[in-house]
Image 1: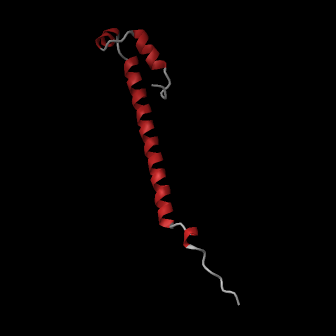
Image 2: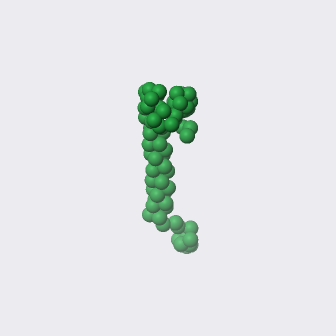
Image 3: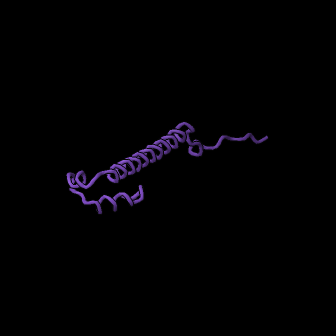
Length: 79
């Protein structure tokens, strides 16, 4: 009778280590995603504020109305 032998230990990766690796990668990926969404939201809010400023307010911050319009018309994902 031949007894089944256990596979050598190098074939068994520690399950906890794999979960930590996957969890860490997922956490970093999610964090980057959240940070990106925050930047995009800030751009939307800032560009809406620019669109609501009058000529005098724009001059105070060194922008023309054309500058403000160009900035407002940019998609949120573009810096």
